[in-house]
Length: 234
Image (cartoon, rainbow, N blue to C red; front, side, top):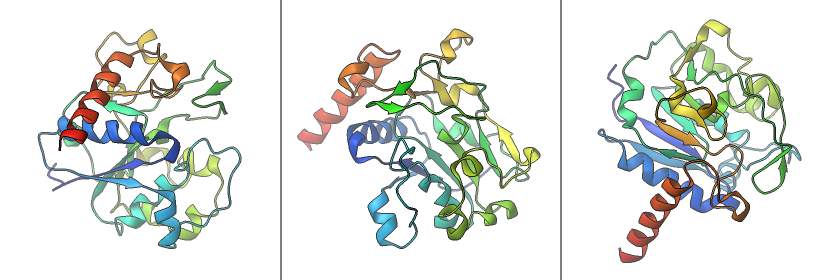
């Protein structure tokens, strides 16, 4: 499918700026096609009057809910991708678009995942719910009629369970991606012997002092060092 120049939205959290920088760099390095990479920064969305939800004490990041604004930001046109900032990409993202169907409203990796840890990242409590992590990497068909339900009023008022479990859609409108696009560190390796396309440090990544020994930490640190070297030499 020819989708033109796709747009990637990366969730931005001020506590994890370096994670966002490394994620963006790995995306751009591993794309054989031109892509737009944008950040979802909460203060910008608030200033633009796109986001007005009250603070949720259970929200683990600043982009917990803002990801669902993507179809609206795209004016309900074309395809766009959202991912959490705690990803690193190893595969050409052009491969994402080879087998998409216009009858699907979203695509995601449909994990059957129950974390064993009670806390993640910088001490935030783990919450367990159906379809956990499905919304951490979403390919949005912004033109799909069902995604027009994701207007500003709904995104700013509906519950987290409604949004993160894709309850505005029927199950038949949710397409499935290869698990390697959302490889859950510490989980996927237990049952998948292949190589990841994109690793998701869902428990916590090596940008936190207490998460230095996670899977693919060396690869993330190498990517970070490359970013820092080029940043300061430019």
